[in-house]
Amino acid sequence: MATTLYKEVNYTLKGLAEDIDLGEIALPELQRPFVWSKAKVRDLFDSMYRGFPVGFLLFWATSAVQEKTRQIGAGKKKKHPRLLVVDGQQRLTSLFAVVKGYEVINEEGLSERIQIAFCPSKEKFEVLDAAVKKDPEYIHDISELWSVQTGKSRYVKDFLEKLRLTREVSEKEEDKIADAIDKLYNLENFPFYALELFSSVDEEQVAEVFVRINSKGQPLNQADFILTIMSVFWEQGRKDLEKFCLQTRTPSDGAISAYNQIVRPGPDDLLRVIIGYGFNRGRLKYGYSILRGKDLDTGEISSERRDQQFSKLKKAQDDVLNLTDWHEFLKVPLTAGFLSENMISSQVGLLFSYSLYLVGLKDFNIDRATLRLAVAKWLFMGAITSRYTGSPESVIERDLVEFRNCKSSKSLLDYLDKVISSELTEDFWNISLVNELATSSAQSPSLYAYHAALCLLNAKALFSNLYLRDLFGPQQRGPRSNLERHHLFPKNYLKSIGVSGVRETNQIANYAWLEWSDNSTISDRSPSDYFNEITKRISASDKLKMNYWHALPANWYELDYSEFLVERRKLIAKVIRDGFGKISDE
Image 1 (cartoon, rainbow, N blue to C red):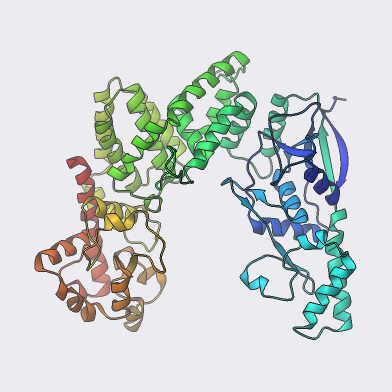
Image 2 (cartoon, rainbow, N blue to C red):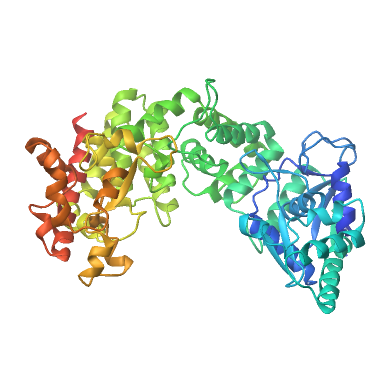
């Protein structure tokens, strides 16, 4: 019989929470931030309440003070950890946060409370919200039940007294409510089955156990595997990567940082850039194998090869996280007309263009101005053709191979132009794109491309002197948005002429951007009623520009609705094409 690396141990919920509170149970660096939704925490308590099994836990015993740990929950701990969580982090963090009423650190690096409510009469759990908070039928925060100083019996009496102030409660119902609260309280004795890896198990073995366990059931993604192995062999690299990603989301108060309002990647997103740029691979599973020291041709694994690959990883990550290059790259989407994250249809495509930017800058020494325009055109092409949506890894891998096969800066630039021309043909502009616009999806790549084109063409909002470029960018929050999507043929008007259903009324070709005040003025009036009236304030030359930018067919307000949609799609496609041409003109 093989010798095991673990022993079996039994816990109760109360025992686990107390050990975490003291600091005896902590997280190793290979673990991820807390990412569970509050609804999932609610469901966990519901399962326990009904006596369902909620999975086993896996710990790693420590033989000495561990520096590579993360505590569970906020606040200072009294003891050094004796057990590190290998599997079960999300469950343990959820349980601890609710039982003890403590804050947890989420994936944004922020502290937050998880408040779960319970209705004893219905034996129902809910995430606390404004409606539940007003409902006297609920214990608004079950954390109170385990933290009260007066004891469980006093808590039940107080709850019933407050409930009687709002309605009558029968003796039978009192007993039912008391039993439900008693059952909830006794969850502190809920049993947990755990395996403890011996302290003799080293970090590399723990990382392998972690990956093997999480590759079954609800799997981690390939980026998680890479982050795990980085925790073992390059802990600082993982910390730097996570810090950079956090910075992209957090204003820096004037300090130089990665913060921006176009793309806010997670560590897995930037790993794709690093592996693509540094190892010429689009599939992250290859990146994981490479960093383990595996020869992809022979399958042989060696520690020497692993060390060599980590050296390449460090160099690639240094380039990817370079703040100067990062912010220079962020001029690329701006050049392509994509001014904020709300205009990006594919973050994968945007970040792949960062890989392309670094290849052109570092490997081909292309000057920044030339490179910016070339990558902006590639980004626009990739966005409008949905090149990197669906299953993008094979496309990324193929593109990377082609980029690296180019022998000079000229050959790379020529190759990019060749692919763009082969994708954006006359048939694409006049047929495919027009057909793509026949949708009601607010997330359509062709719609985002139209918005970008309007910015590139310096268009103004419909009936307005305000530039869309200013309004599409980051704005201050007010009672109403400065810019609103307006139905050119209002929904209630369409309903009056027999056109109904979201698929018909919310067509892309029925929308235009205008100021909210004009949107309110138009309301549900017919186009023939409002258009000539509202355009009296606009000069003839400005009206011509407005009709061009907003792709309005001649006398569009008098057209049959279906005919209007057909004609406007053609004009929108032309505006998108003109917008793309503007990048080339630069």
